[in-house]
Picture 1: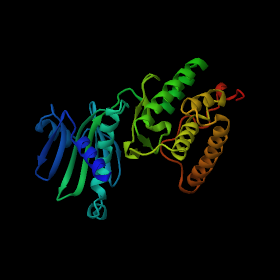
Picture 2: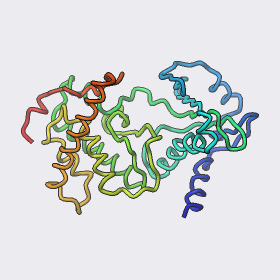
Picture 3: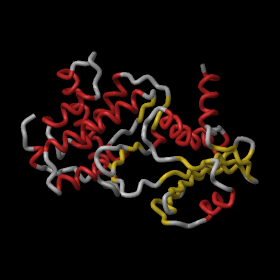
Picture 4: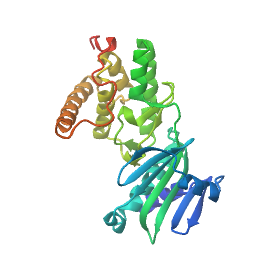
Length: 286
């Protein structure tokens, strides 16, 4: 079983339409129409830095994002760096094969030798004029979006989530910040480090996802809108009347833990714009 899974992952590392390019200090997997000089230019160009830390840097170069990561020595020695650095690239191709919308991949580069990866880089599509669904909905509410339009948005989002889960993959962080849209009808999944492939989508995983999504929207939307949204993502074998109390309880527990952490360590830089956003849509009785 492991060897079969390994073969599948190798086929996704360099799928059809991509080429394996040896480099002086490593290897690259690049879309076939990208030349060596173009790849080197993308890696060398400073671009616009979107995020930076001691371990990684994310920058934008026109229609592309370059995400570079430096791996710790211990991670390199036990082989974890190679597995972790390849995973988002493999997940991206896996999901695209299954009809799940994710940013378009361009190249994946590993720097290192003999299986030890010192650093890696992913180059993929920059989703211009896209917002995460929390921000998109917040902007639409301020513009006076109506209930039917919100329902249509939630229906489309539920269908996209169902396509993701039907693919045999599970996104462990399916909060609204990791789902992008530009028009409320098409949805792209990001943060693919959190995607697990060929995992059984059991009740525990489903509940975690539903709690994440419910927590993303419950400050601004009532259960009149959110219960049908959750129902669209439930199989017939699960009773909604039993499921929703579990979702609400787990969401409250999640919110309590998060707020306790913030009280101790400070709030995050990026806050869900729907938090505390009490609109007319939340004044209805569910």
